[in-house]
Amino acid sequence: MARKELAATVCEHLGWTTPTGTAKISACLDFLERLQAAGLLVLPALRPSPPRRCAPPSASATPVAEPAVHCALSALAPVSLAEVRDATRVAQWDALVARWHPLGFQGAFGYRLRYFITAGERRLGCVLLSGAARAVAVRDQWIGWTPQARRENLARVVNNSRFLIFPHVRVPHLASHVLGQLARRARADWLEHWGFEPLLLETFVDPRHYAGTCYRAAGWQLLGASSGRGLARPGQSYHSTPRQVWVKALTSDACALLCASLCAAPGSPRS
Image 1 (spheres, rainbow, N blue to C red):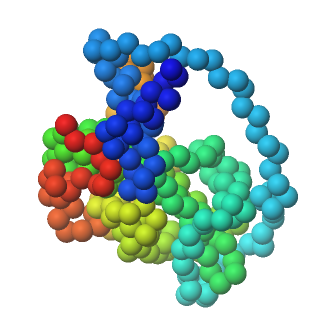
Image 2: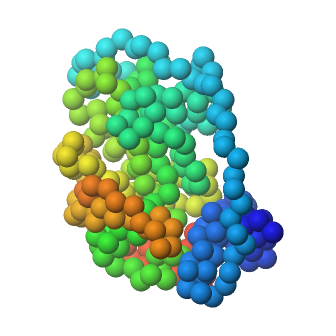
C-alpha cells in the first residue's frame, strides 16, 4: 500500500477531515512520519514519482504591461479586495505573483484564499492567505498555548504569505489601507470558504529588504524574529534568514481562544 493511500485510509477511519470534508492527507502523512521517526511504526517504502510535466501557461495567464499608477490614495476609485476563485483568474493571479513577488510563486496548497487588490477596473496587486507556520517560537510564546492546544487550534491562525503591490503602482498608504481591509474581511471570507473563522493573522518580513512599515501602520504587532530554522520533515531541517514575525489579532480574546481546547476548528484531530 502506498503511503498516500494509507494516510487516506487513516483519515477515513478517524474522521480526520477539513471543514469541507476533504481528507487531511498531508497532515496525516506528517503525523505518520513522526511516529516512524519515534520508532513506533514502519511505513511502506517511498515510491519514486515520475517527473511532473507542467503545461505551458495560457495566453490569459501571461502578465501584460500595465500603465503606471502614481497618485494619492484619495484619487483612486474605491480600493477593495476581490476574491479570486475561477480558474482563469487564479492562473492570472499565479502568473503575476510568480513574476513580481520577490519570493516567486509555485502554487498554494491546503487552506488558502487569493485576492486581487482593485480600484475600479484596475488591478493594483495581489494578496494570499494560507495556512500558518507549524511552529514559531516568538508567536507561540506570545499566544501562550500548549503544544496540545497548538495542534488543535493552529488552523485558526492564518498566514499572509504573499502581499504584492505591483511595481508600476506608487500610491502612498495603499499597502496599509489594504491590510486594514484584509483584517476586517478575513474572518467572514474564511468562514464562507472554509467553514470556520480564523482568530489571528501572521506574516513574516525579511528585514534585509523591508521594515514592515505598512504592517505597523495597519495595527499589526511585531513580536520579534524567527530562528531562521524550520522542520521540513522529521530528522530534516532547512535554513533561511531570520524574518520579522508580525501578528494581527482578529478578536480581542484571540489568544485565550487559541489556548482553549474547545476552540479547535472542525475536522482537527484530538489526542
